Image 1 (tube, chains in turn cyan, purple):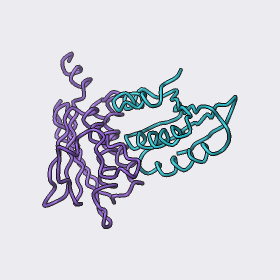
Image 2 (cartoon, helix red, strand yellow):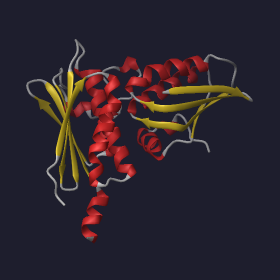
Image 3 (tube, rainbow over the protein chains, first blue to last red):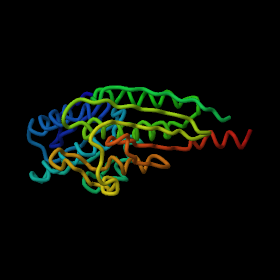
Image 4 (tube, each protein chain N blue to C red):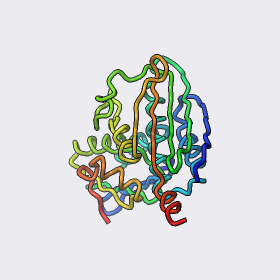
Length: 102
Length: 149
């Protein structure tokens, strides 16, 4: 599992690469929180184009990040989910917290 | 074609083995000609069941997970078993968003995901106190192939 991030025009872009499950969850939590503390931005876009697998542990990780950013009034958006990730997001209602953008 | 094939694999209840478990089960299912979506559904359900063993079954020490996969016609039947502390209330455990560890950023959606991605999910006691999760999925392309043949 790897995580890359950069800030551009007031947006924090986070790219998740690999498999997000119980084994990688703590690493993803730590790295996302580091990225969230890395500068000034008005919104966050999480790019899942290179995420190869995710189960409900990933939902817990994302909801945890949502709660942290909600306190700072910073919205989080999801882009490029696989059809499989999309299925999990729709059934768990995650898009109501983190809308999908194209 | 009906096969009576099966396989079993046992491993330590550690998160590092989750990836192995889902890939192992998915690979074994390939002779049934599953679609990519079906394989992803199976991998996710297996991951949820094994995660449950890793996170909840053995709070006081180490333990093992036994995964058994068998074919029943075009159905794949997967059993994920532990000898841990078990679940007291099966009905409550299956409720969406219910978790016994609310402080750990758990979604509480494990069983809901299993139910959504598989055709049937059964929770049973494994021995005196462990848990056995039985997942069943009918592979549609196999059924279509059988009809057209």
